[in-house]
Length: 389
Ligand SMILES: Cc1ncc(COP(=O)(O)O)c(C=O)c1O
Image (cartoon, rainbow, N blue to C red):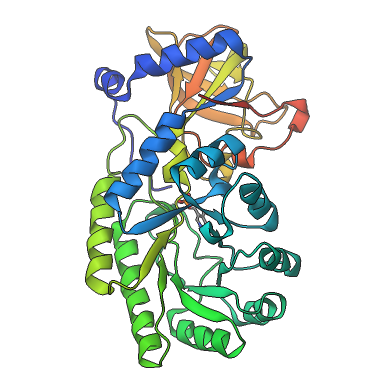
């Protein structure tokens, strides 16, 4: 976990985050819906999309739907003109069914089943990534003529979720793989990388861009100029109101300058942002279903937990800021989910006012890698209902 520590300054946090607006939205929703629910604000999806486009105008965003595949989210992005990154045939089917065009999809999982490759061929989703030679034989067999980007292994240092442990060809292999792709009847289209998710270290992007440039040069010298550079996802968001050290605009402008400096105008830049586009739009609203006093602390049991919408604490290594609608003196408390498992504990040192059964605890910036990885109903507890607002 490399997230910077939150600073405490509640006055500043309230005015900056528009806490009253968020809380009136929650109060309104509570009148109509049972908890747990997750509000996804379309206005924030749109705002994040515009921020991305403004900061990286030459980079086409392919929203990585794994972050949050809710149809309302996908439809909002289709309306905005976004392209999509999918990891499997079911994800591809979903975005196509909602109206995305096959030319606006990248199949960005370097390991694919033959069935999924054949599906991509039938639905004319041509662009895909790979990072190893056996995969090329599979692609050539099930989708001759597919356009392929070699995904390279790059430094993930400083990113909360490392991805290079499992993916990425060595830089030295990249050109060989692209040449092999060509000889097998595929179209070697370019290079891709992913610096890891919640990447706060811009150096990873800058280094990866430099490596990609070298591969582009090598391919050009050997007679097949590449056309696409895919800079992946990773763009970070703030999870806490007063978190420091996350500045997308500063990072984005450094990336933009570097792309401009190292590549000529014919190269098309794309990216696969997930968290950045959807994370800030989500507000999870839960209620206290039980309370007790143990280990010298208040314990509050909520109707959502680790197995459902807080699954990001496990799979996304994420920490969240728990907020209440009550004000007043704060006490060190423990928050836990509803299942019969001690692992289902959300925080052992949360400072919150005293709460009662039915009181609300909510979390902002939880739209990514939360409901997406929730189980269907471990112990019979369902995940939050998603409400687009
Ligand atoms: C291949 C690929 N692309 C894009 C993403 C989205 O990354 P992020 O949510 O950090 O932007 C991921 C996340 O795991 C990924 O594996």
